Amino acid sequence: MPPVNLPAFVTPTLLSYIRGHPQLPHHSWYFIAGVTLSILNRPDEIANVFKHALETGSGRTDAKPEHDEQLQMARKMREALVKAAPIGGLPKAINALFALKTVTPPALLDEPLAYSPTSRPVEVYDVPPSRILHRGQTFFDKVYGKVSKRVMGQMDRSGTEDLGITARLMYGYILSNTSVLTAAESSFVLVAGLIPQDVSARRLPTSNGPSSYRRPLLTYVKQVNPQLKGHLKGALNNGATVEEVKAVREIVIRICEASGMMKLGETVPGGWGWRGEVANL
Image (cartoon, rainbow, N blue to C red; front, side, top):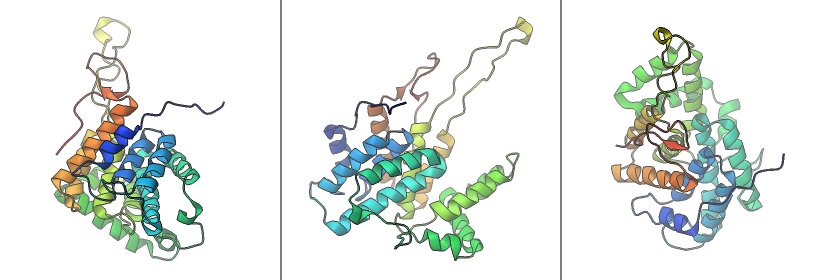
């Protein structure tokens, strides 16, 4: 089956809005947009965003960046897409990174067996796992604060202890590595990756059969708002300001709306959007 050519929705007006948001931290608009588009499964638009960033720069005013800044931007974008994989899925990260590579000049790529800005190959093969897992636990504790032990304990008691092990591996080897993205920037990635996934509660049709046995097949569809709320607060714990976190939330919602997502009424049986307010601080 040939690839589907979807209409573009990241317009110059939308890009201008994202880049020009006064509360958004410097050097963040393009990778926040990239993560959002990855979760929306629009890798084609990630390529457009990155090409625009290479031409206009990382700030609010147009200024084509020099090579060193372009390299920093490329690395931040790649690292953000990698860090979005634990919450958005590896297939979307693969699509996003390959789409990004098609528009990345060769001089801005990090090839295998060469210098690694994250040092992850060294961490995987040469650093004792206990050290990496301890770093991940420290990062997890910082994000979740006083409820971190309860949150990790719930995952350990989810019916399989492997869920907690998975979280420890993701936080250790992926999320807690701050060589390219700071702790606060890493939290922005998690916020941007969760907002497009949210689906709020809705009642599904009742089962067939005698009235005494009829009951909803599934009363509510689970939402990711609880996880989002934790990471909104986690961004503050990682050093971001309230204004910065709200700005990230705002531009992610704007991108989602541009893609066609909308707030759905409780009586609508299905659709592309949110069934409640997106979690906020």
